[in-house]
Image (cartoon, rainbow, N blue to C red):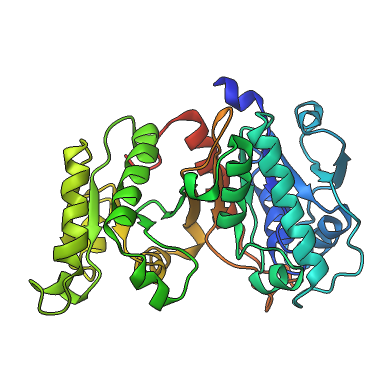
Length: 358
């Protein structure tokens, strides 16, 4: 077993009013091998409530076992759900409603896990979904996990956030996509398509996936405009920004190709049983351009991976399920744990340095 896997994996519970606790409870109940060596950073009362919720639609969840230290998970018997309580007990958070307290505590779970991982105490962190409105209501100065983790990693390394550039990758068994920009308006996203930003995205993608695949990844680059600009007829970003960034990346030994029409490049990169894709990953120019094709292939298997996070002990491995808090079904026990389990498995694979897509 790799040395890193002698360390536990922390699963942050997410927003207490959403489906995060229920997906976590189901993951432990249904996949004991996948969750071995994992523990929950969250709330004992919420996890007990989640167990009661999932019992409405199937078998009861494992009994909650409060722990004081992460390493305790390795001494626990199979059949319990270890929870590390790091903030106040949430006994009065209603399901399905935006709560500033749930937002505050959800952010605290992530901050605690990030700091422990950056100290070298954890193998990886897997984050159940937060709610952006709840974060804002709590006064959390970050719109989501990615930005929060970026700030924590930058602080640990003693650098500015600008010196810790990160990118979001969404992946499943058929397709990977990395985004040039993340949680900004579409108008701002268009402005983020600059030569330095695209080149930096290619560098981060190459470095992260080379470590995972054991070889240089084949990167297909999507254009920004319809038909990748059609030679400048529909926009000149491909000519003036994206193609020069690709040329600069190739001069550094990065296997980047394009820009290709964004309505076909994802199909060309898709891996199926019948045909291997032309690319290992697609670099998309903005959030929805890259996420819609991956989510269309199956939200239940999608995994969100943050690339570019580093601390004093090396890369910070963070994965997350590809869905939100789903307030509309929270508390019903109907939440699907498939994406969370996929995120746990991918976290292990990234720690072990093995590839998920051959």
